[in-house]
Length: 215
Image (cartoon, rainbow, N blue to C red; front, side, top):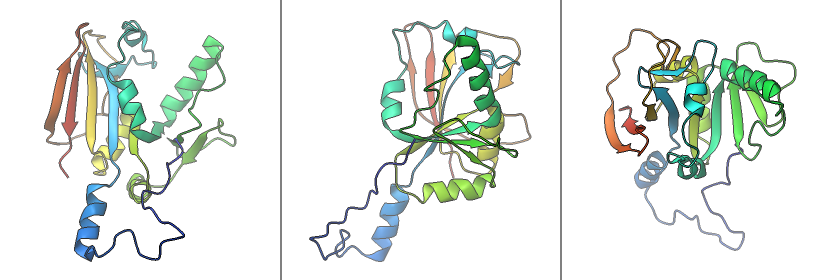
């Protein structure tokens, strides 16, 4: 997702800052309030997995295509997606199997893939990241733009969560047990309290849970 335009408006015909006489303290408060959020928007099985051990999500693809579970609304609010290397590789392999090798990544958005060993050539619309998670997140938040979608998988979500760089979880719990697989968050010792922002039940049994991660 390519970041959208600067949120601070300047006109060549104006000689006065758009902040006007707003105090420095109020300016800082406004900046804090409008800071970009990193949001985990994801689906899990009822037993907490985002995919089977090999990355397969056929249990998720069986859901009715007549319901978008709020995806369209959410997509309008973002301009950046964060991917883990395993998720990136899985998508490339899946596309080869299905014969769809073009348009895998929305080039209108900024797509960042985290990897310690980036490939020599990336898919169009993708930029690889090797820098520490916290430094990258803080640099990204400092730029103007919309919200940031944390795509995952579980290892990348865990890294951002443990670095204190996840703002919200938007989890769609699908009514199916898959027994084993890739957990929503890579297992480590942690104790992270969450604050419920909202919930919604869909006709097919999917439940959407929105949580804020207090910072």
